[in-house]
Image 1: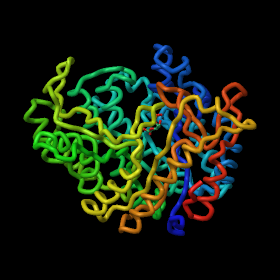
Image 2: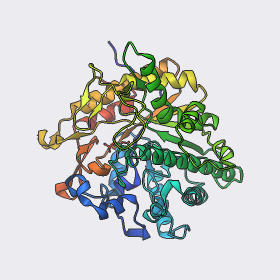
Image 3: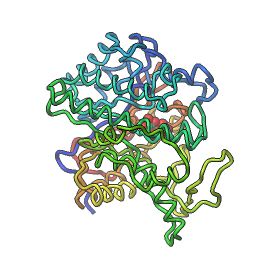
Length: 467
Ligand code: BGP
């Protein structure tokens, strides 16, 4: 069988974020963000006690990394501007932080790489978190001010903006699963945070449209949202209760954002459920108008794993939180044991078909996809990591992307998460995602892994090679 291909204008790139790469955490007048705060408070929560401070040393290796992206045939890269670097504690532009990002944009431009800019990657300035974070309207307004300031300052330079990366993840990781600071398990709080982020997105999108109409933002610029949509599955012969579990999980994690960015609404069934359960989102008069500003120009889809759920065996958990679903362990699951995530390449196709059927007007791209493996440096041959599993993973996902496009999906490109290894939140450098190794024993030196050569062949030919 011949190899599948991707369209000529399909783009390949890399995804990364400011807080996971930049380091330089006290340079350019940067304020502490939530990760710096969590690292200061309890470093033992981080794998091998590696906190947020150094990223992957990108700031010092910027030009080297850009040369790597170019050499690998990538034409776009997404990162985030750190709120804590761009703004000062009075909510004004920090000129040194602005210079940092102007230089960053110029360096990518000089290399012919389009830098996509995301405005929030789980990295609230610590002082705003102390004021109540996303549950406080003043903080929602502060984010809108930050977004407006960024659009005004960089409006002529950036063509691809995103308001948020994975807005569902802070409600999950910080306020439900208790794995990220402040380590809470509180369903009601998680929903209030989700609602605050939703309003922040609406206000930022509104500011973008206003500044574009005024000519401050370039006319060809687009605004988008990126989320980790998890295609939901249940048992093959589901009960009514299993399907109900799918409805709720899909509603909170996926449809909430899809309805926001296509219709400027939130899913009525989920709002009704929350009201029925007595959960107060703190809705105020005028919020519907903010949410109505939510529609975007295109969408980013981060895909790592599907969601498999079934009817729960209990209605509340040990914290008193409601339980709508529990995990369904699919007997056929193939796992990435390092991360505990199922590898299911067809999920990318199933999501593409959901978009095609339910949200047909929206263009999108795969904004993250990747595999993080622990201990891979142990198996080097002649100094090179032998990561054939990474080739298998990306190839299998790209094959489904190619099939989806053939079947009408409006998918325009693919960004791999962490082309160069980077710092992964509480896991720090435990699981490595890169096609390029970051050698922590030797001052963050970069080395190509075996898979890099395969990636270059795919990006430059658009043919999905077997190996
Ligand atoms: C996504 C995030 C990234 C990245 C990636 C890998 O959810 O947008 O920031 O970290 O997942 O996950 P992890 O780092 O938890 O292994």
